[in-house]
Length: 615
Image 1 (tube, one colour):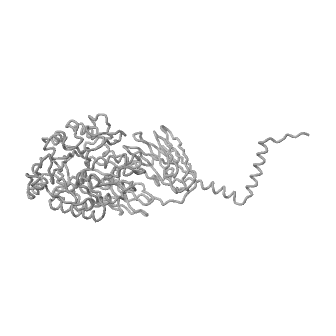
Image 2: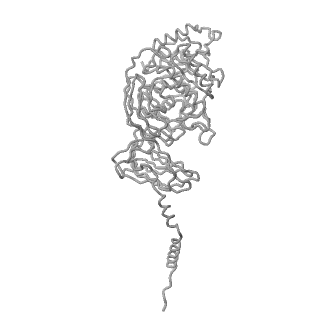
Image 3: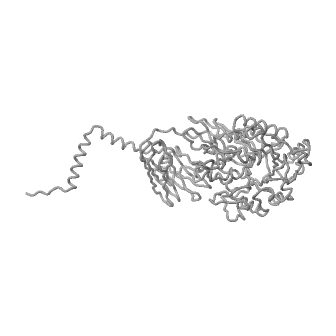
């Protein structure tokens, strides 16, 4: 009898059955397969946001968990991009080298992203342009040979509104558990409140090595103790404070907020120069050529009109670039025949202060390169600057470091935690001077755009090297001292084209340049093009716009009409032209110019423009 011959598929099935039976007979193979499957666990801590933001670090101040809408469970993440912050929430997860992982999550909103970085191979990101209801995003990656941790993140996009995320998971082999960030601080309370400061205390947190204090959503300072005093505040102003705990694993969620309102400043005279630290709502700042003469001629301090609210004496200069030893030598009569005597100069300082004006010593300038490369130079800087302030009874200090005074070492890439000695030592020196003279000490800075706004595009030598190490080098100084900083007036002159927040290059010579550069300071901006690394905005009362007083004073002069258009756009959002600002700032402090002398040479045109505008 003929029998049906087995076909190829039938033979393959029988062979597979035989091989399977044989393989299952090998001791330990079943256990090995089960262990491999068990290792592919969900590695995300609190991926469903059922425990608030525990395990997550979020850049947006309003990041929070909500009870609706949710994909599952009882909570989901809500975050809203604002300005140059894309509202990223991230978590670092331990993984194994040379292993495959699947990242998944559910999102809703316009332009929501889910991704992983630090994979050691190719970082991944997936996104949706529109998810009116919950939509799952999934991507995969493989870790590199030396990768033991990756950072997963979700974020929105600029100007596209609130997004939501829930049930974020990362499946794959578990790595060695990483240390966890500490818990959020509790017990935050306010203590003594003055016109310019608020004292805060909170309960210590286990495993915390430091704390970060936030003022109105922006990090104001860090401290290693569970207390801090926030200084540099404005009188009669309400502030909101939160605090986080920090260790090597990261930063905790923010504490519950407390609020405090500073009283009206009624403390009267004080401070190093006998005045008060309070500036008028809108101030005019100018540099007075006190140590040299040029084509603008010498102007006696007593002859400076009352319109000038802050007068910077130019310049104190070092005995050598790295000495830190600052000397202020008044212009000799052989060079400045009409220079007043020391007694008359000091009397003029007191008269200005009695009229409510501030007189500062400005350190640096074009020819005064200052590099505090050592702690010895730092200490000498503090001592020598103090001698100048005390000798003349000045109100404070202006930092006008130019040229090669500040630059970043190749491995110094985080403006929040600088390591370059010239940066670290300058920050330390200025904090020491502030602490020595107290809250009424006036501290101003006058960096060039190359050292500030250029940092939006380039920071230091860059990831791959080759960039100018001075790019953005002022940012760590400004950031570390933002709570002590009275005024920042960037020199919007003698500048090359700078990329603004609109990703367009802006050049000197018109209102557009001043508007775009100032918008960056008041909105904040990503550093080196990294949307996860944002330089926070300054308060408008801390910002004045630096302009040359005349065509002879510097490149980038603009007419009175362009000055007026700049102020209209920034304080009223009118007359803006092509550039669209990210806000309106009626409390913008004012204008700075180089210089009082050149403005006098130009028949006080810059001063008259300021007076006409602000009244």
